[in-house]
Image (cartoon, rainbow, N blue to C red; front, top):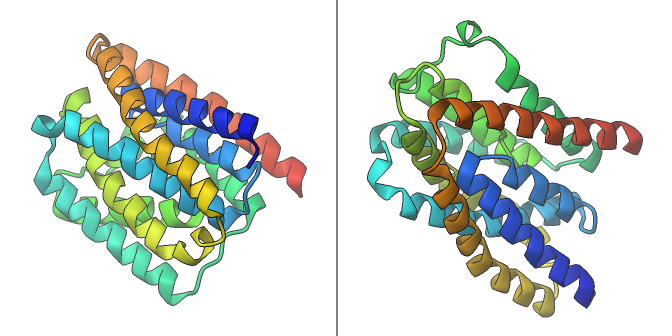
Length: 244
């Protein structure tokens, strides 16, 4: 990794962490796209997992008073079930398919709420939501708005949604790193040094985003989230199609 690329990497980590600090998503989608531009899919997903552990961990810590631990527990059970199934199937990601999956995910935020019957306040629905989100986190590197599908029927405010999602994603990304640990070993010691430097930057970016989140209303939060992830998704669809 060249010095200019390393600096760009640090800037992307800070910026995407700030985005996720505000919206609870989108930042991870953009960061993974940057990593896929210069790393094989398996290595990119592993590195993405390490960085997101820092970003989501700091976001969960800053919002720890708003975490709904009961919901988190049931969703994490589903995440672990999905991870176990993919490990049993010996799943290996394909970069083109990863791009298309990431691109399609944002479409979900535009579907009418009445189409979704999932409510993560109910244990069975939370486990199912975790299975879907956990499977996508490992298969495509990110789960996008799939966790939100289970939250749209709850009456949780934006702070509880962001805090609970961050906690879930900490565990999901940790499982992802374990799943792809062999690919991560392909990186040099110097590259891991830059990654280690990026972790505190992800924390600083999250703090900046968290300050913006406190200024948003629930309505503006949901509106901006839809448009942001849709733009990112459109980019990935085009990139995935061009790769075939």
